[in-house]
Length: 150
Image (cartoon, rainbow, N blue to C red; front, top):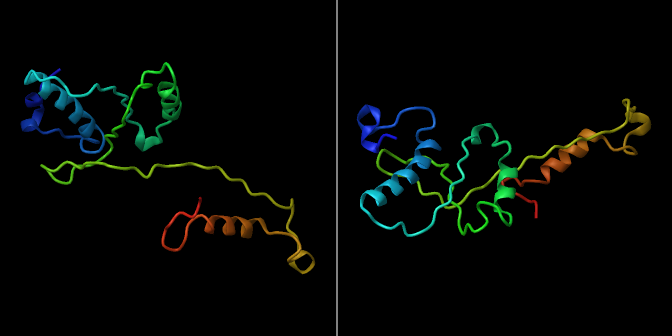
């Protein structure tokens, strides 16, 4: 593999994802290369799990993480995790990530009567599924964006 100085365009990396995912992930390899070049022992053991499908939902990553962090898995003895999904704040200022909000997907199905019910006969006595759904959704977050789920 070419060394850092062999990159095209004067040592700069150009392309989709070069600052958000690929560049920060590559930085770890460059750090290891620097230690090796200086003939220094690396102060920790590193285990790599490289996944670059974040923009398309990282399908399958949850299964890999569950398997590999379990007893006997490749990452069983990992003591820390570093996620390389961040941007640089300028050409000479990397972003140091110290926390993630994460993402969680849900599927919710609301059902009700098979046909419309006349409000004059059934209004108030039968729950309206759309109203129930709106009430449920508005109970998840307050007006300031604070998550209300315990």
